[in-house]
Image 1 (tube, rainbow, N blue to C red):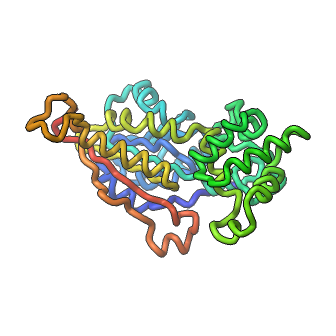
Image 2: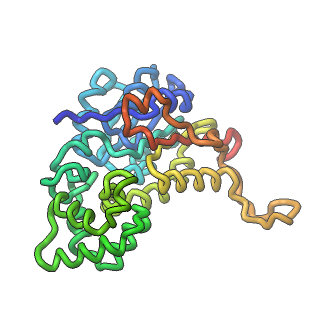
Image 3: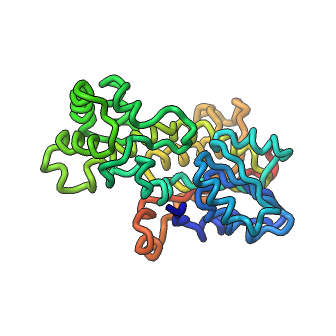
Length: 315
């Protein structure tokens, strides 16, 4: 299957980046290279660094960016290591960074990847990095009841987490749970019928939670944003596209903390903590996809774009 991914909020992201044709840009979630191609098109003497941990994405992006290979460097890694990757390339500062945190259409549609609850015969995998030895199967079969409840509640906001976890633990005593179909069956009978009428597929929240836990997505995001802001040149911008409230909340809060890091009590007349703003939040409210984009790609419905600009006079 070809690696396809509809680049969500593409024009809006490119506009927010304020691309300098001579600048250096990093796409930390290269995927199908949709955002990267549009950046590369606008560069003259500038450079683009593309990072992704998915080998299939790396192969597809390398092919699609072949016309711009003199401007592009592609690295297989997790975006949390972006400062290290860029430094090893002999670069100190960059002009812009893009993160598109969505799961690609390819990853969802490729049955063997196990990301989608729409296929019953897929193995429980969900690894973005297929070199990893930790998958969704390990969580479902090896985590304790309490650990499963915690994952489903925190990362899936699943109100029936105790019931789902209880039934998972019962079933795995009989035999190891290895397929998405088997997990779907367990989830389906764990949720009351009246609660399945609305809210989409009953497995949606559980699969989201497992995927986040497998790939440590929120942990990586939370640890990575501030260090990426530190990489930016004066007036450089970081644009982040999220797809659920947990991601968006992290981005919003960390952007705000970098804009206003002062910890002094409000009654203090002047700041004495010494913490200095790194820049400003450009998007006071997130940028949402247009009705046209949603009609062309329903998966973009939950997308939100937030942007932060580095200070001119602060390091």
